[in-house]
Image (cartoon, rainbow, N blue to C red):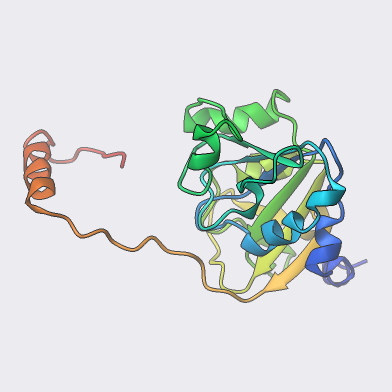
Length: 214
């Protein structure tokens, strides 16, 4: 079977895609601007069918239906990087947080310390060889997808392709849902004279040719 025929065979609805999740599964959801909102919404509709599903992720963007009050006992977040989407749930004891350096997160998956049952990925369309790109989010998505038992791909024609070691083949994916949506963005925050002064002070500490981590 060609990769294209395989891809077509795996295309399905959101409802069918999230049907692979079972009670007590650990689901990794890609984060940042690659947060798969519609997959999360579809999974949330299965609330009454599922118990003790763990949601692992790194900084989800936007509104998160899986960490809202009332989801206790059905879904529980295990955040590797807390953000606005799940901060209230963590503070209120409805979600958990694993303190970890970002560079250590892939090791949690590859070592088996944090085994993943299902990975929800937000990917680019496949190229002529059947490879899809992780696009704007490759921090932990690659490790999660490579170690997960099942990979569900939300394929977005507006997800850019990123070069380097950031691809996954159609053959590795179990379910495909196609969408065409703009990626979320963080609007610039206006800064005041205070921020300008802080920036000026910091600039004096930076030497020419320095590498900055922001």
